[in-house]
Image (tube, rainbow, N blue to C red; front, side, top):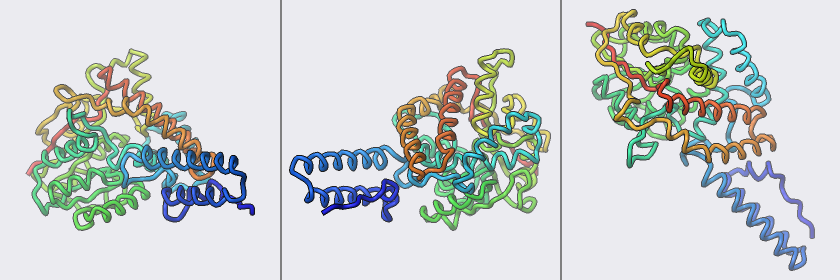
Length: 393
């Protein structure tokens, strides 16, 4: 009796997930033993067991950053159809060959939207649901350190349960959910990427936070909210995507109620950055290219732009400076995980499970991680320059 084994792709897409697919693979292998000699049967059994065990270990144990998050076999191009992912990746890089467009406000939203279509699944799979950094905390996991960093943001704007607050650039909503759970405020998040909106709503429902978390698809440079309609606002490493920071600050100022507070964690170059140092320039440009930034700002410019639109500055400091522990250690510690993930992404792409272009996107993010690490180690870059502002009464 001969048995035709299913294709690898069929196994990966077994209806009830990878674990059952592995069980199916073992069952088929065992069924095949009856038609072989004892030696061949032993060899086939050992081979099947090794493959099944390897798949289980590689995908289920070492796969996602969070067991309830995105799976490797579900990687996609967001709202971009699978056959167009590689073309969109090439278009993304072509943007940097036309530097004048980087400062053109009408071009940047589409550029940023394309970026997040390309990277959202990889971020969520390999990093988690909060697309930002946080200082390391001795004795705490990365997940706990991230949550504490997010809770600090809402504590700074002094909101009460039931207040309506704005998350400017919410991504898939990791910070939103932590902040809503911590403060019991009603959080409205806005993101330009429709795929992220759908992911955030799905996570909100799973977390049982639909009553506290609302997600809107829109451009934070032209927000669909009424004047004076929020009791507070925050942005965590998001406004760096604005071509002109004062434009997004002006929108936030408009929708805040008088007397309300706004806090932002900004990506900036520090006092150690030297524009005449080739290494410094290479690091900063690498961060800009790999993170869809129209241009990193200097830390000195942040408060000036906030004052320009009418804010009063309550507090300003770099949350990455000592005694805070380095934020970039997570990137360094993840190098082994990167290579493991890159092999898996390469295999999935070769099998047609992950879209063509996914390997290129994953490699781009690894190169960017190196630039970010160098930026942290040299002290010329920080992703958490905190500014706390108040809209006057």
